[in-house]
Structure formats: structure tokens, C-alpha cells
Length: 150
Image 1 (tube, rainbow, N blue to C red):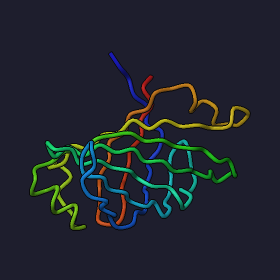
Image 2 (image 1 turned 180 degrees about the vertical axis):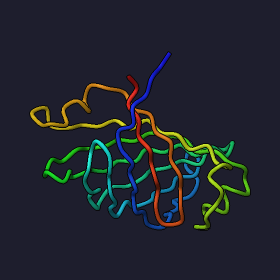
Image 3 (image 1 turned 180 degrees about the horizontal axis):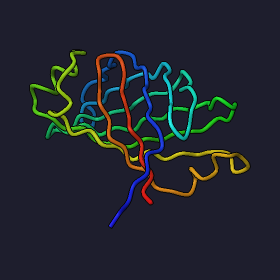
């Protein structure tokens, strides 16, 4: 059995979808990450400059890899690579792509965040665990609830 401990809630402010069109693995999209907040056992801000690189597969599933950085309130920078997937009906996916809010109960959106924290910091424990997260896409932001697998 697994046990989980809440680590933090991340709210990432995102830009519009940049659709690059069909590629060998699916439809490639990039979404800029402009900033945001982190609250919980980690408190800080998301630094501007990150991005969420997505593929919309032929079966409609969205695969994503988001890379961004957190600067904690006490000045420590932490790199984040967040891999995940999102699925919903074609109608719900289309509404989200248009920037519309949808009922989160209609969307499966899970991620596996990986943290890289300085080894000599109070956040070094992030380098030594596996994390799972649930996420929700809103028109201009993504909310992520991160849990440590104990």
C-alpha cells in the first residue's frame, strides 16, 4: 500500500496555446508559463520563462512535459520537470483548447513532478522522493496539488 503526504499547491499562470500543428508523434502545442505561486511545505513563486510542451495524440490523449523553476520565499531556486497526461471527451478537450472553463470532474489530469533542489539546502529532501499530482486546467492557469509518495 502507498501512503501520501501533501507537499504543496501550485498555481501556474499560463499563456495561450501555441499550436505548431501535426508532428510525427501528434499535434505539438506549447504553452508559456508566466509565473505563479507555490504554497504548502514549499512556499514561493514560479519564475517566468517556463513552458508546457504538449502532444495531442491521435487518440485524443494529451501528453505533457512542463519545465519551470520555483524560487522559494527564502531565496532557493528549485527546477521542476512535470510529466503528465490529460484526457477528456472530444467536446471537453475542444472547450479547454478554446480557453473555456470546464467541470474538473469531466477531466482526468495527473502528473508526476520531479524536483531538483540544491543538495545543500533545506529542500534537498525533494531530490529523494517520488511525487504524484492531480491538476486542473482553468482558462489562464493550471492548479496542481502535489503529494509525496511515502
